[in-house]
Image 1: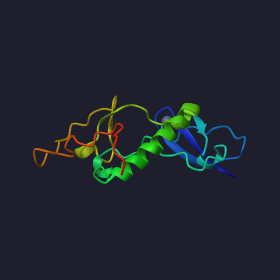
Image 2: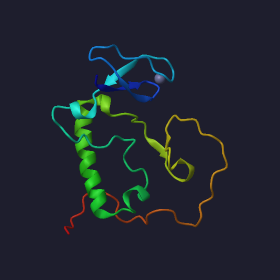
Image 3: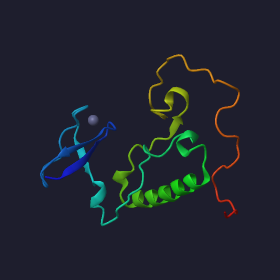
Image 4: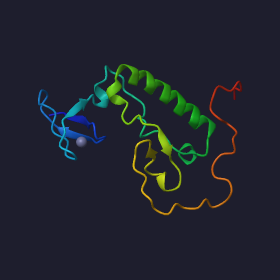
Length: 144
Ligand SMILES: [Zn+2]
């Protein structure tokens, strides 16, 4: 039996071992109906479907402090992913914009619409956090 990915409106995503024509199971979190998400290798021979929004680096730390090659590779993956999501919207996952991704939100980014837990925020260690305003994405004319 193949393992399928299921997704619920509450945002939960889980895998189940299911018969090929079995109905989607109820969400283990909230009990609502879920829908099948095409599992990665099943996409018309497209081996690499890229990274979901959740998997994309949310901070500069996740990009090795803006390592140029890494970022370029990421952008390429991301472009590919977006084309794929255009065809398969169910892959898009949580598309709410990330409202905060620093400090205590680094592991779990705060999404628009999420309740803000009022815990004491970590004060920024120094005046400057990440990045310095340089290397702000976009097309650069440089070739290396
Ligand atoms: Zn649910």
